[in-house]
Length: 122
Image (cartoon, rainbow, N blue to C red; front, side):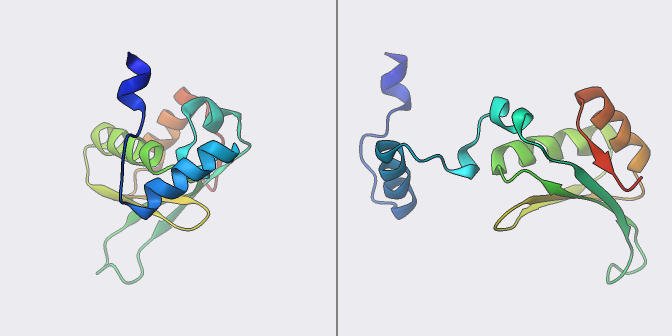
């Protein structure tokens, strides 16, 4: 019965129709990657500090993340709560990006070390 809950019965959304077509043909959408698939990918996060066009405020940017909106959103939420600041995430056509308010490179580095993620630019 659990398979029935996850099965799409009907949708008029073009994105859902593409998803159904891809499932039938066996293609995998990079945005629908599971957590196991993300950990198997070879990726390295890139850290940088930005101040330009932000009214003098410093922002920690974590770039080059895998393109999976749900995963990046959860990581952003976890980083914001661990650092005690605000932030946001963005998705481009081939990668994800997280912005955290302030210079929080040390806190983010500690969390990435704990999770075993690779990074550079510290």
